[in-house]
Length: 67
Image 1 (tube, rainbow, N blue to C red):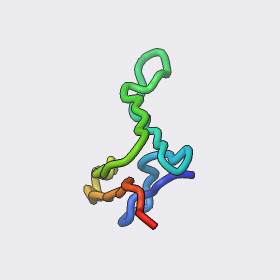
Image 2 (image 1 turned 90 degrees about the vertical axis):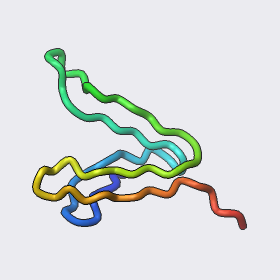
Image 3 (image 1 turned 180 degrees about the vertical axis):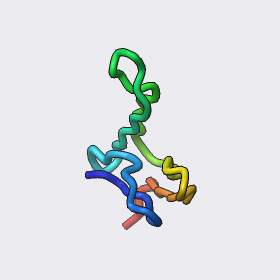
């Protein structure tokens, strides 16, 4: 499942599971992403939209809620 920009709808980050997100951006000459990052655990991520005409910041709160 992808998380999209709240304003323009561009794909920002891929959600693998409840606490596992994958971010890949850019291509080198060997078709491998320049940025290849996996986020696991709790925290907060501020994702600035990569679309030049948008520039919106989407906030993902990854902290686990206490029941």
